[in-house]
Amino acid sequence: MDRERFEWLVAKAIDDLPDELRERMDNIDVVVQGEPTSRQLTDAGLKRSETLLGLYEGVPLTRRSRSYGMVPPDKITIFQHPIESRCRSETHIQQEIQRVVIHEIAHHFGIGDARLRQLERRRKRL
Image 1 (cartoon, helix red, strand yellow):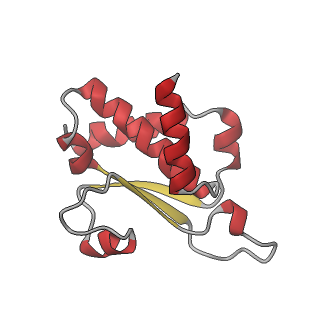
Image 2 (cartoon, one colour):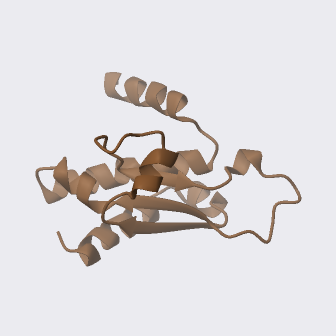
């Protein structure tokens, strides 16, 4: 898939979020990158052989104090090649992008990986 189409799917995933979530997102950029860098893998606690589909870098809303300000935007990076390599169709890519975008935005709202795994297990049971 070309980068332009992939970026459009990421933008669509954000546009499809409920209004109340989008309106509460504050000081955040969402970007697409082909692959994670070695530093991004290290910062995420992963080895070079492990896969990273998305990454949140910033200060979650739950950790911001009243003095928070005049700082660069938080950043969510969605990694195109790892997502494409695990998907077999454009529909599957779109679903995976949506899942990864929601996961990374949850980090922006202060939800950690353990709680996200718990929610994902619950969702799969339903």
